[in-house]
Length: 488
Picture 1 (tube, rainbow, N blue to C red):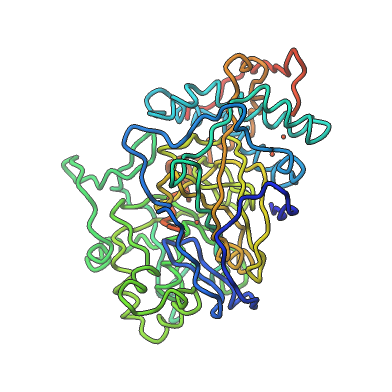
Picture 2: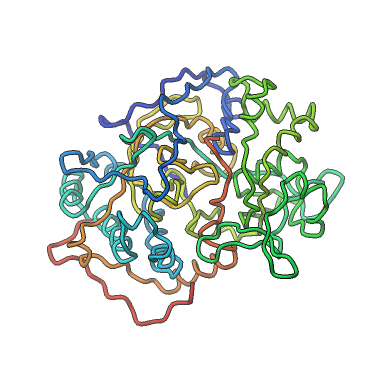
């Protein structure tokens, strides 16, 4: 599941200007995932701050979108031309999710909140994703795709950080880390399993606290206190070679683990304590331990190797603790919908103010391995979230797995905007999500195995730090089968 960068297009949104030097992977990597743990080329110029605070919050009770008039609709032709296998994969994953009971719960009146003003129910949301998929697959060219989108869909733009759509796009990835299933002299630092007394909301997966023997629920202790108390002893899932590696896994929410015999294991998010999150890289900068230009993965790791106690004190400022479980390769890495995220086709947003699973037009810039920016316009899917992606002015692009993806994720820091496609109510009957029973059941099972699908590796604490149709006039209506689906 890889996606390619799109060719330059005339409607790209200018990103933040920045001068970056070319560098090898180990030097150029910038960890824009992991709560301000940004990794950039050691010789790179510091990234300028956005003009507007990208983390400015939407007032309580409001969603993060602005409905456009037809005169304001964006050009979608370049995005149609840029479709590739990754787009197809991500769209298929959203279609499958909308066939599950988990999606119906997410789009219930109890869960939608202010988003109901944009997408009032599951039927409209499901038809919207299937409609875009159909048009992407069946439009004969970019012009006809744009014409049908304009005719059939309402388009909603993110309010952004300035109320006019300005969004900061960062990147995230899944690290590859050496590990052991048993504690050894080398591997002494654990990732922990989900505690039995962790309580989460049955609908949203949000942590509520810990349940005592008398049934009461109270907040979890901070990370440092939890570790010092030894309460997690016996729940170790896997062992890593450093506390820093363990922390990188936590802030990403998933990892590909290479064991001593070169076999591979996959771990992913299984819950969190829900305590306040504080980014490691930014904390080091704010206290003058490193400069903004030194806020790189390599520099922080070398600092940890020289003075682990110092870096550990800053790690402990993050009170939140993340727990893990093992995943099968085909089900990894999962996004917040409980389906795999796809390179350059899955976007993480704030699910409290944006609708889950829908197709989006993303206009920004991405960067190559040397940090050279390139226009980026494509259809993406809103399939993930993050502990620090909590604003209308933020979006996090999934960049893939391993060292190469780490470079691309680290180099990703550009402004742009995004739009959601929501069918006009009169066109809903044109499209129905086809229920592929085996696939939807598989998603339901994976969702249950990885506690709370709406918070799967989505609960990464990254902070900037972690697919396709043309409808005939009668519409491609497909009746849903009578077969029962598992309870979600």
